[in-house]
Image (cartoon, rainbow, N blue to C red; front, side):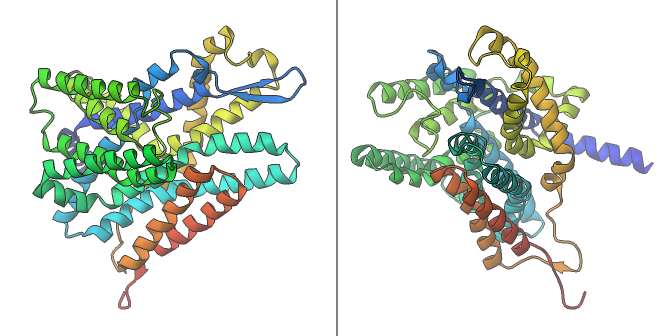
Length: 425
């Protein structure tokens, strides 16, 4: 009876979920893996030295493809959807913003700590072994590039409760202020040539895109006629094309990622509108039990897959060099043809790595009975310590000192977030 009841409860919980959000989140992570797989080429030069290249970026159509392939805005919008629903659920249970921030920091810091420890050991060992510093710097920069996401996502998520309240009071005005702020920041950056000004758009752009997720959760997009959604997509891309044609932004949407720029806000509008347009067939697809099982399996370790896929890709490429027939010249016809096989191998290895590591991502964040949560000062300090190494990677790229700083700061952050036993427990 209990098994049947548990099964019914699980089915009821799934019925209340927007399974399309789960599917889209997993699809975004897998697309990132595919893009990075195609962007990294490792080969042997005529002098016998290892050469790293970026075959995908060498293609004449690459910049145009990023107008569809740059899916980080959709990822942040999906994060907004889950943040709003999680915040409302937490409020109903009597939680507050400190509880919310603590949970979000734990969800990011826990899976990130093993990676920074791994980078500290790997880069330290390679340095002591006398690996060519230029090659080591190239590899470290590549494998560390996704870490910017931790800081930007945590920043947006930490302010989600405040932004939800603004959304409930003045949704349109909040969006207008954020978008205007993004435009002003970009204008100042372009006019002065000081790229650091653009860092302010870590707030304006990503919070704007997160708000799109709130609007999606409220049903605003679902209430629009398909023709209106198509209109939003067309207008967003038309404005984007105009901004690029004016020379203010690169046609490569990956260049417009860090610091984030107005084109990402426009892509967010188009992507959430498109997701809404295809919601019905995707929802039908997600009714299948096998599809749900696969999506939930990957979704439960999505952050682990995101964090570890590049080290695995580099490792696979390096090992392939030991068997020349398995390592065609990057960018060659044979190289492109083998990418499907390499993707399967990489995904299988990442999932294998995730088996022991996924527990860091799925560990509960609730405070056990007889314990109390850390105070607000400890929680916000932990958030800052988690943001620190991600911001450092964003600005200076990964190296051994940053890896060591990250391992240390994340360890302290997780210690600060530990539940404390109450005195009478």
